Length: 214
Image (cartoon, rainbow, N blue to C red; front, side, top):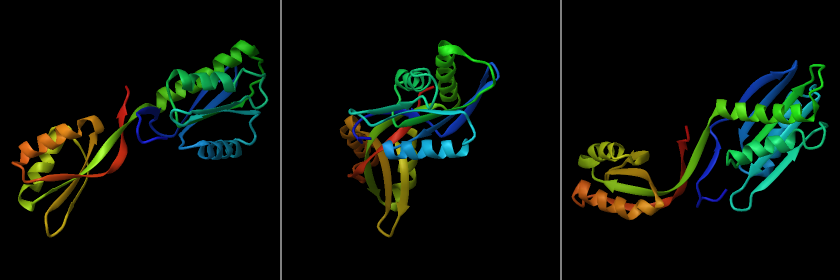
């Protein structure tokens, strides 16, 4: 995933079970960085539920050039993997893998029933585990003397800036702050005003911060 773009993904790994006409549908979700991680997650779930009749899958990874894959794993073509994948698309997710395990309950659901069951299994699991937006931020290393460090840290947090790390040495304090890239110039202005020009900020890389979408 590129560090230059914001995107949506699952908040955490999770699992949710539903029952449709005595068939159990167990949806397992995970955040994955690439196709290799997605396949490893799928393999692990299939190994865990080795005795299930079906372990159907869908995943989306990547940014501008997204890679999407799905599998019906023995269900009628188009009744499982595709509706699962469609839920991930509709929610705007990437770097997300889903496996829906089905234990057959003895009642045939028909093509339409299967589409609804597999799609609902993923949708309900997503509602349970939650979705976050990952936003790209510039990391700035703010250096300030010991006397001002505590107050500056409090001011940074009060102003809504993402303080990621604070460390001290003989020279003073180093406060790592995440700042949305379009706002770096404004941050430098704020910092100068807040400290009377006694603190400095230097680029320290890039990362993402997570914001709940609910």
